[in-house]
Length: 302
Ligand SMILES: [Fe+2]
Image (cartoon, rainbow, N blue to C red; front, side, top):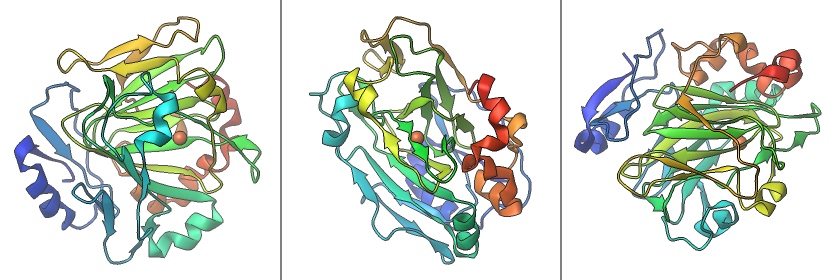
């Protein structure tokens, strides 16, 4: 069983306890979990990879047989101000901590050959002014090796996340969707869509893992010129998240919903993403070779 339910105040203890458990090797079911902004319980999830976040230092450690950067890259509040609703706001600093290129040493060559990169990101608790703690928003640059803006597949490990996506960075942003995800949930960011990832719970850190292309690079200019993406996640009165539109875009509607499953991309909802890669690396090849699903992306809805 990969999922435990514990009272919130047991979390620090439980993190230490649970991190010593072996990685999941067999199928286990992801139970249904209702997103609630005052949820009394936090689900703990075993991602099948021994990478552990330490909120006291904002650094990560690795189990034996797992590689990753010695020092996490820390993203400062100053670096993301241009994409925030209030660029002068106060908030946690650093805002988040990233280790790119992590994995089992046994998989290192396969990850490189397949141009795949796995990373883990931890967001601080708190707020950025009246906004949720989040990234500033970006579009993935076109990767030279495949000629596509590459997709990304995100799996929440701890806490509660929101992946916000919009189809275009133009007067009309097109489809705008905010996807709520709890540990074990997966969200696919399709090629070319602008997006940011937010921590939906100001009381607790949020950790996620993501597969992306090894030649990843980000495009920010068009988003910064518009002062961010089309919707800002505000949390001012109580725990409810209120989405406020960015006036530099034409006003559109926003879909807010829970994470879905992706049978069309052959993502198994019963296994951690990293385990799916270990079992069958070809299954995630579309992350670095999006042309595999070229037809599907034309009408894809995250
Ligand atoms: Fe991204």
